Every structure is written in structure tokens, then in C-alpha cells.
Image 1 (cartoon, helix red, strand yellow):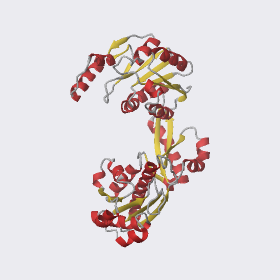
Image 2 (image 1 turned 90 degrees about the vertical axis):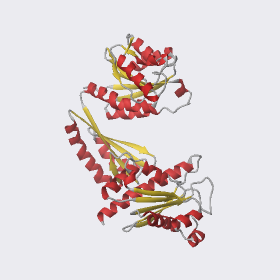
Image 3 (image 1 turned 30 degrees about the vertical axis):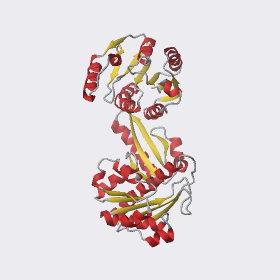
Length: 420
């Protein structure tokens, strides 16, 4: 079967003007790759019917499927449905279930539904309708003469669930195949280094495919197989995953776990362990990311942000002599912070983070110098980190990467208990 091609067409003058970042195109493109649908072009057009028609003509001249986002709202300039329906030669008709869902949405939120909102319940005749439990504008798919348009709302919190729950099954039916993926998450190795280890596999493998995605401070590999059913696809995936594990397993921290904080919380849960954090330069970032994970209350005792030296002494028991002799940004201070928070909380694993996130040098310590420490009965370690980024986003970058390293340290230390 010939591989289908799609073009992503994002609609909205606010995108063209740079008022918002077009994250929708990136999300859809990645998900289409999983489905084996080629994307050769992406376009952005403003809220103008004439230019939208031109964009549709061009898109359908080079793609089988056009996926649009935006322009489904209730206002006068939301004209995506009207323009696309006209291109397909279809009229808009009231979709009563969508109107009923919209009415319930407004009643539940305690808001009055104005007359123009009803415009969103009119959809192209014969379209397959996509419900929108996260907003008021339903989406839909239109098909005619081998051409398909999929209309999705603009706000990402509405678009992404609709794409996942409705567009993906719709597109999967068209391909006649089942696509299944696993995401492998790596920490401590860069994208280029990981790709170098796996280059031969990535170049030779067409089913399953292996695609790397660089994230801030880590790397994700998406391994995707296509087959007639899920069991066959899974049978293709497992040998590939084992081959990747053999090449770079020392950096692999999880499969289908989403992020470091989820991996850390899940491992602590599995082993019946608890952690606590003492943070200075990260300002509670480690604690925040841990508590982003559902179920963190089972494994997270407390997080103390001891920004001043006085609070490091008073709350954590860091000695005055240590602070005077080595400064707050030091291996010694980090180690005493980790030991102090473990003692105060009774947790199994204590984490200490201290450093200089900038923008200026402090206590003779350069911007980007960070110290991490872990304290437990079975493992104690102090880790120096140095970040060389000094642009306007450096402070946030340093704090985020330091928190990532701390989360990985929790994950690693918990795993060492399992082996001790």
C-alpha cells in the first residue's frame, strides 16, 4: 500500500504575527510519523477566506490529507469550517449532539452560551465528528474523491486530546495497518552520542523504525512498528528494544515513563522508599517536579528551600564552620544539606542541591557551578555540575538541568538499594 502524505495547515493571524508559538504543528508532525504518514510541508495562513482557499489548493496539490488547526471558534473571523466545507462542495448542517454537548459545557461552567456559540455546532454534511470534552468547538474529518481534511481546534489543550482520541484512530483505519510505539528515555548521554551508538540499527531498520528526539538535558527514542495487529507489532518491537538496551542500557532510565520525575516516583513506590529534598539555587524545582506526579505523596516526605545560609544552619543543621570555610556553593554544604533533610524528615533518601544559577558570580563562585549530594544508609555521593550557558535564559536552564540531575540521582540511588 502506498504511504499516505499529509500537510499540516495551521490557521490563525496570531500565529503569523508571532503572538503565539505554533506548537500544534510540531506535535502533529511527530504523531503522524508514528502512523507512517509522510509530512513534506507545513503551512500557516491567517484568518482570511481567500488565502485559506489558496492554501488548501496548494496543500491538496501535493498531499492526500490536510490537517488544519484553528478557526473553529464562534467569532466572525473563525471561518475554517465554512471555507473548507465550500472547497469540498458541502454545506454546513446543525449537528445536534454537538449543540447538546456545548449546552452542557456552558451549564457546567456556569456561563451563558451566546447565540454565536451555536455556530460551532454546524459541521460539514457527512463529516465524521470529533467530540471536544475540553472545549466548545468539535472537530471533524471530511473525505471526498480521495482527499481528506481533518479539522482540529487551535488551543493545544483541546487539539492534542482530540488528535489522540479521534484523529489517530481515523487515520489508522485508512492505512489498514496497526502502528505501535514504545518511547525509551535516556539520561547522561547526548543525542549525537546515542545516535552514534545506534547508527547502524537506525539506518538499516525500516520496521520497526527508531527515531531520536532531543529533550532538555536528555534524549528520547521512539521505536515504532507496523503490522496487521498489535500482537505482531509488539513482537517486532521487543527485539529492537533489547538491541538498544544492549548498546546503551546504562543510560536508559525508563520505557514509556514520560519523564525523570515519573521514573523516580515509580521506582520509589516499587521499592517502598521515601525521599526528601533540601534545595537552594533550584528554589524547590526538584520538589515541584516530584509532586507533579500522581502518587508522589506515598514517597515524598518534604522539600525545604533553604536559600539563606541562616536557614541552612537552622533547619538543616549545616555547620557554620562549613559555610564559612567552604561557602554555600560547595560539596561540603551540599552533603550536609542532604544529610540534614534526611535526618529531619526520616526519609530513606535525602537530596541536597546548592549552586549559583546567576546571573552574577556569588561568594567567588562562577555562574553555573552547582553541587548535588545524596545521603542514604546504603549510598552517599557528592556530584559537581558545571553549566556554561550565560544568555538571558541561563538561570532557568541551570535550575532545570540541576533538578533533572537530582531526580536522576534519586532514581539511581533507589535502584542501588534494590541491589544492596
